[in-house]
Amino acid sequence: MAAGWLLPVGVLALLLATFVRWPDAGRAASNPASAAPNSIAVLPFADLSPKRDQGYFADGLAEELLDYLARVNQLQVASRTSSFALRDSKADMRAIGRRLDVRHVLEGSVRSSGQRVRVTVQLIDARNGFHLWSKTYDRPIGELFAMQDDIVSRIVEAMRIELAPDAVRALARHGTRNPEAFREYLLGRAIYQDDETAGRRSMQAYRRSVALDPQFFEAWRALALALNFDSVYPDSTQEVLDNKREALAIMQRLIEMRPRQAELYRDRGDMLFWHGHDIAAAERDFERAAQLGLRNDPGWMLRMSRVYAATGRMQEALAMTSRLDAQDPASSGTVVRAYHLLATGRFDEARAAAKKGLRWRPVDEHAHYYLGLSDLLQGRPRESMAHFDDSSHMFRLTGYALAEHTLGNREASDQYLRRLTDRYGHLAPYQIAEVHAWRGEADAAYRWMQSGVEVRDGSLMYLAFDPLIGSLRRDARWPGLLRQVGLDAYLLPGQASNATVVRAAGPDAGPRPVSR
Image (cartoon, rainbow, N blue to C red):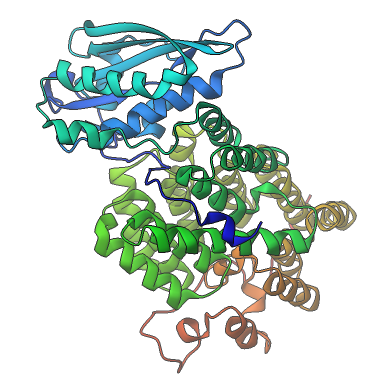
């Protein structure tokens, strides 16, 4: 795709939900009567379509309404992660209000058939379970956006919030007026996840969306974000590199068109950090995002914690994720904190963080993997394999290869490593290097690290603290590897950096097999 295709783009919209209030899963449930009067949660909408195949559309409408409401300065809106975690909950609205620490709850249903859509919405007072307002809309799909505008206006009115007419109109910033483009965009958002087919299918949906409406800013941004992550599982090294270049080109063009949209700098900084290996440029983008108002944004804090950890400032990383965890226990920040705690040898805290993350995100592959690493690093390889089994296929193979080696099962470890290499050698060279390092095979580990440099593997940002590669840090090739990924100024003695090097937990020379 040529970058020039982006020239017509001109509609400002938001892609991700704005996270304003995050209830803590670990604290005592609050009383809705004590929640802020203007607080609200939007639950996932039920799919009542004849074939029950419009779940993505129902979820997308709920997310869009959450986005709109979060733009109202007078409202405190529970995050999508928090409220959607209660999907299929049998609790009544009073219990949900206590769980999410909100005074109001919006629930609804969608029935989509052909070119018509029926949406029922109900605004409920969580203090007593009474309805404050409800309505059923039965409209042609072409009137979808007008229907959304009306729902938001009615909710604001029912909650007795006064907005000037201009402020009401400002809420309705639709990224497209093409309902089919909107459907494809919602489909892409719903199916994007870390498995071996969903990422590719998600990108295809986003491409169909921007083909239907080349001015759909939101869909372009979603496409860039999807391209940037390896969860699309490309089939070749060239495709990996092409995806990352295309993602950065799209994001660059979006920033040129919307130079004061803070989230774009945050997202580009993430791309530059993980896959550009340009830490200085990434930090400039993160600082620009902060200047534009994102300093308290959970996504910004999560990314900054990773930068701190990668550059040897682990205590700053842990402080940031502690702050993020207090604000947003439902986010992936809790799981990232688990990995950082593992690296510093705080295993009990790491396990608690990973388990807390799983309470909100039961299928989080990283949380399961980090629980496995915790057992492995504490000499419990058999126990670790149960956790590795619940992670994704790539992490499962990695974990099995590590655990079988630690158990003294060389042949089994070789088999898992061979499968990992055959399937993911072009995509995840860093994980293969980790296995070789854990097995004490420095030459093979460095060969795969070099492959990671060539493919711009984002996992190379773990070099400072990864507990699996302790054996590599004393090797004469270590400084050269750090220079190749731009970490030398932060991690090598005598270089221009004020960062404090954090020594990772784990054996310096790799593990010793334990008794079977």
